[in-house]
Length: 185
Image 1 (cartoon, rainbow, N blue to C red):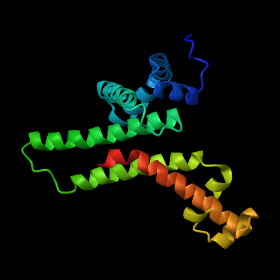
Image 2 (image 1 turned 135 degrees about the vertical axis):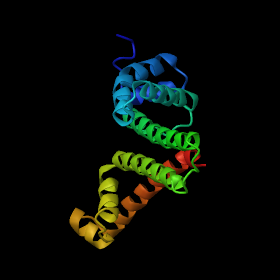
Image 3 (image 1 turned 60 degrees about the vertical axis):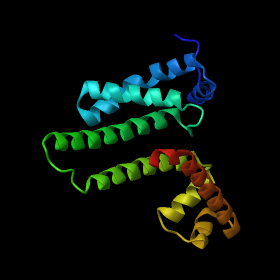
Image 4 (image 1 turned 180 degrees about the horizontal axis):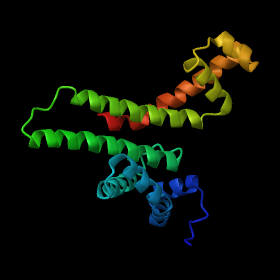
């Protein structure tokens, strides 16, 4: 058992950001099997899944100081899914080229859908990390399309309090998007 085995994911993330290789190794050992299973679930190829997991951890280490990680497990799982979908799209294009076919025009649509799916998963993770009231206000407003007045009544809050919590949620989402915009350049 490593000295880091009892550390929480949050502690590991903090240590990884400072360049602690032992904390990184603990994160790898803690999650590589689950991530490999996730990658294999989507690719049905052990080697491809291993490559993707390796790529995700390499990327985590290379960009450790700039990544907006709120939940290590959720971040890694989302990164694996995103890499799987990118790999599938890239392999499809490669096969089409090898077969002498033109790349269909809808390929960029596929990539855009994958980017949108990654962004949605990421933002859902950010919403889950919001304080309870901000999360509920945001969910009622966006998912259930309730008005400020309806939310205030439902949550027994003043309309100003609802607006405050909505502003808090939107600011958190805006900051989260700023932190990952390099994925979509």
